[in-house]
Image 1 (cartoon, helix red, strand yellow):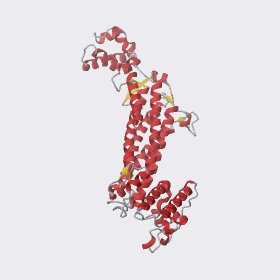
Image 2 (tube, helix red, strand yellow):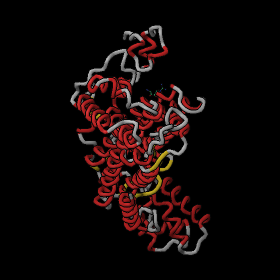
Image 3 (cartoon, helix red, strand yellow):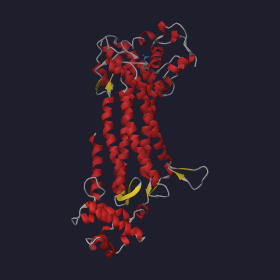
Image 4 (cartoon, helix red, strand yellow):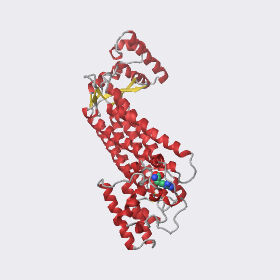
Length: 466
Ligand code: ARG
């Protein structure tokens, strides 16, 4: 891209030589910060209005600026805005350049009085992010609703629960879904907190030291929908914590989604065969006709790495820079755009996967084995007053006996069990019942029906909390 003569640049006054064309391209952010065109224009209108109220602009000048800015916005919206290569360094300079062409440089030249792009970019980013986080919140609520609804409808189905990926104890399929559902509910709570800190206005902070014309920052913040101000002008232009914090939030969410996806990838394999993904979220193999691959889930898992990378990268970018604005901060824009898109898309894909997959309850049930009730056997004797450490041993001997005889534990005879420990009585055979096993775990947080219903209630309440 050609370097424009510096006289055409808005800050061209003290620069006489031309710019290295690669430097021009290296410096410009217009090809990505154009995403903020509408926020930039809304911010400029609020800025102009506040300046009119301070007498910096007269009514007619303000009206012209407002009219012109709306025209610029319309050009962006309709795809007619034409970026001047090498001149339009970023969205702020592009909008101001075009405003001057529409309403004349004399009036347009008054817009930037007392303002700096340092505050402007922070305003734009915060407004843009705030709007994106609203969308993301609604995507997350959809995911929680699907989780809660499925958990309610499919509460009957029992499957193996795993620790160390080894069969451990029977659980309800709903309990598995809700284990992630509760993590997502925490993500929702955290998101609502992050949103509050994003929605603070840096407008009126100036380049770093504040505004010399007594501008009404509160009025501008109110017009732009901010909750409150950033009360230190140096902090206002330096701060990208709102981006970092959003990405830390998003990374945690992606961590949850990635583990969730990993479970479902396993459960959809022929070895488990607990779930089948809808065609809408699977793809075939170009070579092996029989294959149906869980690409949606693999991409969620894969993109989580990318989301953390953006977060860690920005923290590295920021950690060493001195106070207030430094151009390094421009490097916060692309990670934010990419991260937010990745997270928003991933949640929606996850909701699509979960709302369309088919479960295979028969296979879930068939994967249970009586040895998964060994703890229940030990608990049986605990209820007869035997210390757990002892019952654990006794149950272990039953497991060993079953192995020795190549008989499933529930097919051992009453006499054989009695032979291991005389305190087993006839009703011991009732222990070998998976539904009974899950229903025993009825303390809050357990896998019984009542505990699962309680979890669903917790999720629904979190959604409503706001
Ligand atoms: N494009 C710049 C950014 O994204 C805007 C701020 C420029 N400020 C400056 N002093 N050069 O950070």
